[in-house]
Image (tube, rainbow, N blue to C red; front, side, top):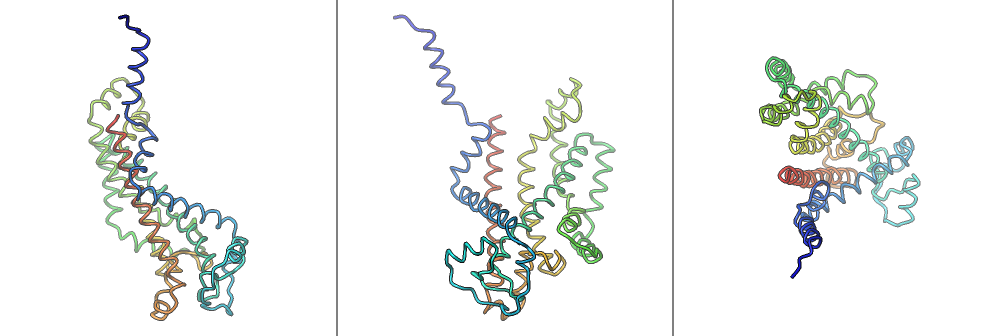
Length: 319
């Protein structure tokens, strides 16, 4: 019986394709399909981010933040699609009631969520860029370079960062969202630097780094193309944790009265309406929506981050 070599080769190729492990983006997709909770958290997170971004762009901030004494702590009105369309056009409908100054809570929620997300994303990006850069340089070179960077890092870590941030916020007269972001980013990169440096030190002793140095590969290529990808799992986890932590820090500072200017909607300022027993018990509409958004954001970020970590770990195991 004659054997067709072409059929054998095609069969072998097909079996290889079937048995080949998923790589790249497919690993992430597979992980989210397997973890239904993480998939639901991702959908909710994307919906919150998309809605807050779209509504923040559409709405007139000054109009939303106008004081209306006649609507002082106005009770929530029955929901209807006509009111939802009116709110989409920027009209006050008081679907979720009014706050102390008669401002529509429903409209404030979208702007405040967008502001908090923007601040957390910007602060996380800045501190990650600084910390990862210093950590990689320190771990790659070691020796005196490592000692100098880490001693400076240790000095910054000993400072009472939260108190210093509050002091800066009190001293700076003209505050804005970007000023707030800059002040929050000054001293918050130390955790990234130390964690990345510890992992980079162990990676720098491995054979593939030594081989690249022997082949005279440029230093920046070794750090960016070879060392950094092997730290992606660690960095991803740290990014997720920092993102959630910075949302909490921003809302916490604003809750205490040291955050954003009074004219800027903030989840922390909305939650601060619960500082009186009467509001806490009889006016839940002024603080409960913002509290719920913060809680949902934290949970969703945590579940999505854990799924991404497992995906990256799986990709690294598969090579």
